[in-house]
Length: 125
Image 1 (cartoon, rainbow, N blue to C red):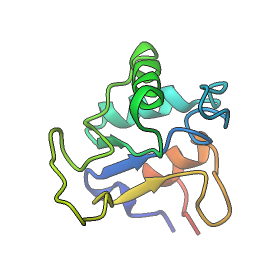
Image 2: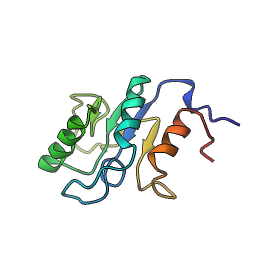
Image 3: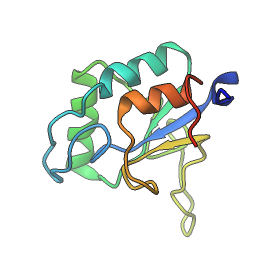
Image 4: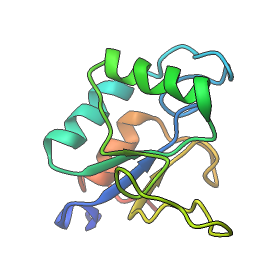
């Protein structure tokens, strides 16, 4: 049975360290296989992508610039929409339909599997 995740456009939150690149925080690790090709393909399909990472300040700027240099500009970075202002005391929780993160139960599946699940080619179960 095919996954129904591809029936509409989604907001997808994507982690950086351990997901787009290997863990080397605060440095930038080696790019994960198929990371940018998959992210670019998701953007071409019309999904709204948010970079959702622990990074802040200079290390966040480095990650954003690294993504830009690899052809990816995110809809938003660590916020639900560009320019969102957080009120004091509120969580930085992102409102997304899908979270792609190496800290998922079972770990990071790999970009090939992520693509298959999001595009409905295989079941995520």
